[in-house]
Length: 258
Length: 282
Image (cartoon, rainbow over all chains, first blue to last red):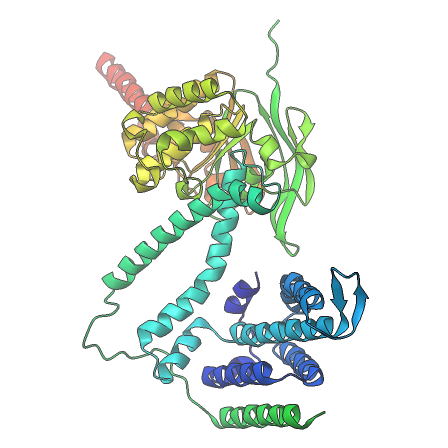
């Protein structure tokens, strides 16, 4: 659901209008900061800043909530596992067999927060960048057009696959498939859905490839032109400078803040 | 004294919306007697599939009720309803997953927890009825679209649901397969089962389906005998539907004495013979 909204989003905020290359820079810079950073205060600051950007991009609160809901299970699992398996630190509870470590729990919380922030960064890019712009951005960065198209189509088809999954599930339920139980049993029960999904996706991929080739996709010796052009404007230089400044400041703070 | 047929499906003031501000079905009420054969027609996006999905619990009404044999289905699960309401989806690839056609047909029967003997016997009967014996041990996913379409219908009909809903089942079928399917459906209907068929093929309805309902923008514009509804040109135009060509021809020739309510080629031929005979006599 998240991705489908991102790709069909048609808002017109300054974030939407920014050059896709700036937004790619934003993702790369913030991923670097998030992966290097080990300071929880900075992480909290980045999370707040990302939420501010979501607000400025006009992304509804319900969508942000949906992201959090999707990431909640793993966000709870990580600190819990770290609490039990963290070597050393002050235990909150120690039964001799099992230890619940507070530093471990806090470290796990930090990892989970980092994961959420990484996801929020990429999703902000997807929410605010159309498929065509994404391909153009990649082409301008010297990525071959075919690769750019493949990447963007993969993203574009996520909502289509979600819809396909729902339709197939409905079709099998209408034939008496009982979706119940969990773990291995559920996996076994869901087999008719997964197999039908794979067959449908393979058929779709085959038809898509033939359809692209029949319209001269990949023809050699062709100088491709684009209906829409993107231009790195003054505002984009300002955004890029700001992204660089914020990222370096955060890294500086990370290495110097005690 | 003749007994009235039992009511198979009853829909009372049904409303439905995928999104709160965009209603798809607006206050639909209808009653389908057991053993009836009804077509659902309407332009794309009129709510045909959405209405059909309410009848087997795939979608739940925003307001209103659906009764299946006098039982409100609100709290019935889809799999529980599947024993009584069979649903053939528009796209056969959404249901085909088994390594052989035989297993694909047996899937629904196994879900109904029938014994192995019953499953085998019914599977064999259905393979024969649909002329699928030659494909019984082949992978259904590798067969042509028309055959996959046929297998998907056969697999649902194998479970002998008392109510059968088919969403555009004739797409991709050649004329002969279509006629075979219609023959099977008529036979199934005569056995006391209720059939609802979604289609855009008005000629097929005129030739074979005695009742139809006309949906337009989520509202039921008309519901009744096909012949009566097909006489109401205005209502068909309102729903952006064109009458079968033979009826259009009969209307144009009405000034020459041809009945304007003719729906089939056979009726037109009979009328023509009558007119020719009359002229000879005169």
